Image (cartoon, rainbow, N blue to C red; front, side, top):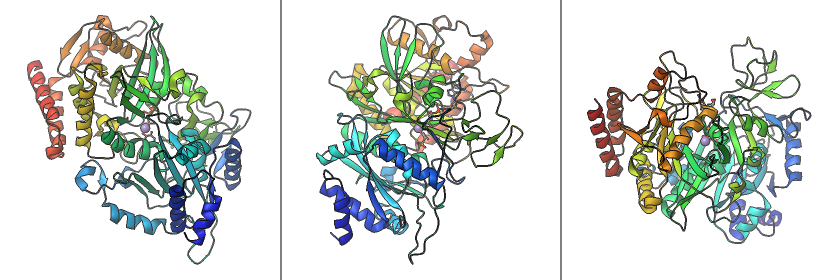
Length: 612
Ligand code: GTP
Ligand code: SPV
Ligand code: MN
């Protein structure tokens, strides 16, 4: 050990194992921080960091009468979302990353990273953040250590994961952990020792969000925002975990988890994969408009699922908080989320009201007469720009949602009855269909398209394939991932959850949503559960089984018969065109594409021909 390393060993908590201390020392030698701080996860530590960030101008403390213990952060306009173009899967072989990921050769990427990380923490504190994804000690849960030079990341990780002394103790006891290094890439001291002042939201124009699936490492440089920086979330719980899951026979998915109880008190659990900003948080906190039904929340973004001893599939939420889309959250659309944010919440890139509270588009029908927008400028309803950034977010502890289910921290997870696949589709895809079997379910998941949202950089609204809502999150070849899903289905056999496709976003010719959505989505779920129970028949269609009109609970909705027809319409010509695009899409995977999916495409084409 170098002298530095000995000092580091002295600052380390007693239960930090030697391998961890050595790794921390190595990262410190490379990044050259002024100080190293091991996070214990305490409230005192959190409050110190909040105060420090308020003093530095990174956080604004909101009016404690309106929003106790809550803060607003404003990011730099160049750092507002995940950067998919700068996200890399660095597997040894390019074909193991597959055609849907950016790939870089691991040793070359390590060299590039070494130049960017060299001295990148000069003048800053390096925080060592132990965390657990999932309840501590659970057999589906996993540990990690994030090193970061961002106190904003630390306080967010404290909400989003189980963070601090407890996970460190588990690591000290010899449990497996994944190393993750993050820097905003804005050193305060240059190589000659010249110091520059900090800025409220430090970041770097060069960004690298990199994953090494074989060595299970994460290195992220240049961004302080969301999934780029809170490395437990997308980088670990999806990209690295999907690789672990493939190797160990489980599933790491971009899915919400909910518990639903029917009028007969029977409970069910359901997961749903929707692309980013397509309604997972809303569905996870659904308030059914149909009487007798109750939804409770287990998770809103990620599910880790394993076959249990009884052969069923069990899911845990690896996260401890919600990093949710703010715009559109209102008393009408998601009152549960809105009230979860009453206190102890970090808001990023929303607007500030004159009385020290927050606002975003869609929160109220009437915008306030004056605001400070997400960039810190005066804003009035006449302003041509949005007051809150479309990807502005809240960070809040999961148990602040009144809908949280008692079993949300059960380390054993909950047994899954139903899986939904959805996306934002203005046309073609009906409100709900049931797949004929698991294999067609995998085909449907694999071929999901969705209109792009503001959750990542790029052209909002353009239609893109987002298989299993995992396009930006799968840590290996997508075709192998489909093969893994097919294998898991074989393992589960008759215990496999039933798979449905849903679409809340179908529009009429005037561009209006055909379906009211939100609380009324319970009507579609009720039908799915009635199917699970064998209570209702369904009609075969080219895309699976369709509900019979009389089996749908539509009481209290003013939908015309024509609107309902449009909502469930399946146009063979449009589906034939989709099938052609699917063939093209599949072609890029070459011989990695599972034969079962080619057969499913043929079966779809046969059903289209029959319907034409
Ligand atoms: P990530 O956190 O990015 O993974 O996304 P998420 O899937 O949790 O997204 P979220 O639930 O926050 O989606 C928010 C957007 O979807 C907002 O614009 C909502 O208004 C819209 N939305 C959610 N549910 C519905 C619905 O049932 N119908 C319609 N039309 N819009 C919906
Ligand atoms: C998503 O984009 O799917 C999110 C937000 O859940 S982020 O954590 O920034 O990836
Ligand atoms: Mn997400």
